[in-house]
Image (cartoon, rainbow, N blue to C red; front, side, top):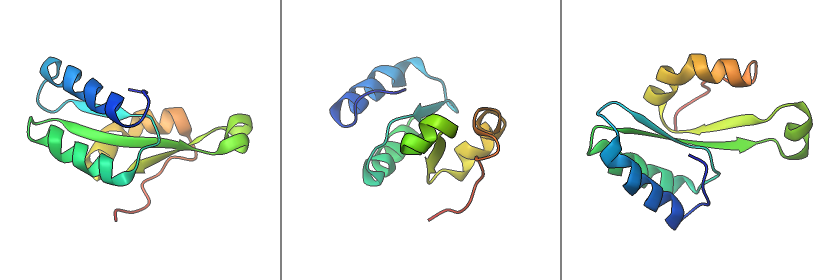
Length: 99
């Protein structure tokens, strides 16, 4: 999903959750405060879902040469999506660390 940060993200998650099945992943493509991402990961985990916060970095250079995704704190989600991420952002996409 790519919606305005804050309350619109919460509303969208609330709308999506009843439609999703255990093991599904919600990808938030907006740049969001990491504490909100952590809260949402816990919220959806209670329903057996995963939440991947994925901001996009790069600014003007990213617009010209390819943006760089910033994945927030979810090694499991990244591993499940790594082929997809590599195809979209290769060679810039790699798991670097977990906080």
